[in-house]
Length: 233
Ligand SMILES: O=c1ccn([C@@H]2O[C@H](COP(=O)(O)O)[C@@H](O)[C@H]2O)c(=O)[nH]1
Image (cartoon, rainbow, N blue to C red):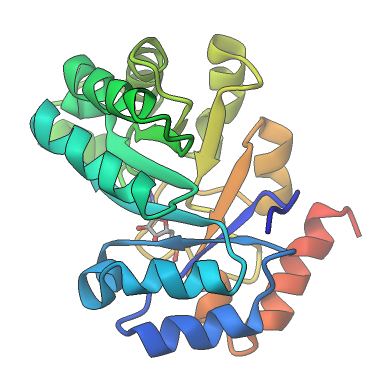
């Protein structure tokens, strides 16, 4: 089932049962879901089959980062398992991204292929420690342009960078933004955060939301509050 909602709920759980328990409360007409490293490492491809069986479109967020041949093979595997969206790290470079793009095209696989720019958990100091002297905004711009030129359909970035990327790369270039924090949620380990409605106004095309919903005392009430905020209620 396809949905018009920009919401992608991150199913960051340590077991398939826990993830499916949440998926059974959510609704594929109201959101997409994201499977990340923890859940996929625990459950493997079974989780994709189970979520597809429930009607969900799935963002497989494994952030591939390796040599071009390896990443191309991993992206092909994700797409052949029916992932709606899959990602690589833009810092893997142009040849890596082009190899992934070429592999999907050669096999006629329509999965959205996007690239991570700068993790939303990183601030300027974190970048400096890994040798990046550019600000997060500057580094996101550099990697987004490289991603676009390497055939990516969009990027993962912070909503704080969405407006600038909309200007640079256009409306159709996907801006998938984690680090979404409604007023009732704690930032936790995230550093470049924004509220849901502000993120959409800034030009984000998709909002990734994990703990504000999944760790809420009442997850469905938290989801409803986010939807109400997006609707301007
Ligand atoms: O830059 C990035 C890239 C990916 N993520 C992922 O998004 C969710 C966010 O979860 P919250 O609980 O809402 O913080 C999580 O699965 C991350 O792995 C990200 O946060 N930032």
